[in-house]
Length: 500
Image 1 (cartoon, rainbow, N blue to C red):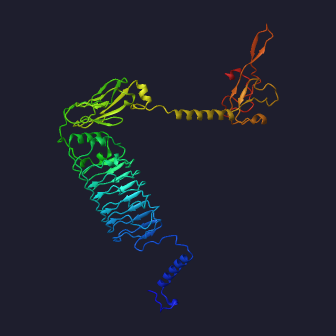
Image 2 (cartoon, rainbow, N blue to C red):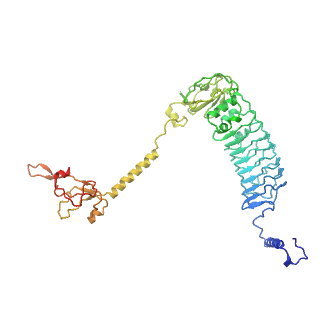
Image 3 (cartoon, one colour):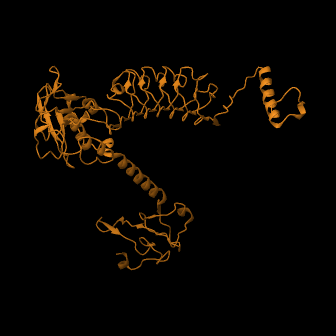
């Protein structure tokens, strides 16, 4: 109910009271020059703490009064068609997730995301984008995940992924790309740690095999559901990935070409047996080394060699280079250097699957093997070395146990007989006492274990100055060796046969 001038103030409705209170608080804060510290949640959005959701509101224009404290902003399932530079009134210094999926966005102006420099997750999937301009993602240096699948992207201009230094996962499936976006890996300013690239369900007919072989296999390049031409280069790549158990190929093998034996014939003769383990080739520094491709002779198409530093191709050799691939697939190393040592892989279309123990790898050792091993370039195989850290730890534990045994089983002198005789155990008899304080108190536990060490006493004899051994068994009081309580304290051994 709206409040009019003719209505008394005391007869306003509940809604009018709430509106007046909010207006009075706002006017008071402005009069006192204290602007409101927290922006109000837009009426067509849902706000929960720092999460703002304006999803499914049929918005055709982005709201300009969005709270700047948001860390997650959801604008999906609306009718947005463009994203201008000034789509928000102020910067989002805390925004980490921005969701623009399920709209009709066909244009994103350059530098449109500079207002949110700390974005980590950006979702622009299921829109109508056709071209990615060069400065479309400028300023997103912290972005790690970018979702662009389900658009109509057919062109990616150079520099489109500049400033995306931290990008790790990129989804480009379900578009109209007909060329592999090489700028993702080799353009300056592009992603440095990209580990996941989804290019499935596009219009790719060829892929840069030599470039893909140079990429690490820790991540994944998903190329399934593309009209790829099954040539010898692609067949060699797929065989290599299959041997390395490359997950994107293992999971979606049925959606790749070259699935049967109807592919191209890429070699005239294939050696049936391949080495079980990688062969090792030794060469002296400065010498020439020829390394044949394992399991392949007389190839009719290109052969690739994956070296520790680069990937070589037989049809694109540089005559001035030291490492070249001959037409028959043999790797030629001219004037070998120590840094040439390492593992080399021959990638070629052999037309067969690798056995569980077959390997297309070779080891190249320049100089003596010990030097190459110290440089860390040779491949280490065999049993693991004994863990010296475990040995040190075990030695410390044993030392501590010995110290504790010494402290709590202290040698002590035997006590005199209960009758007061002065013989005792002898001058050199010792007992391992359970408690050193028992020496002073003279107490003995009848159920404890005692160990006695008896040493003979040497005394001088009066006969011809000869020394004889005198053992006073009649005055020895002992509790036995490893006594178990069967003999009482103070029992005297009088029979010499009992000392055996």
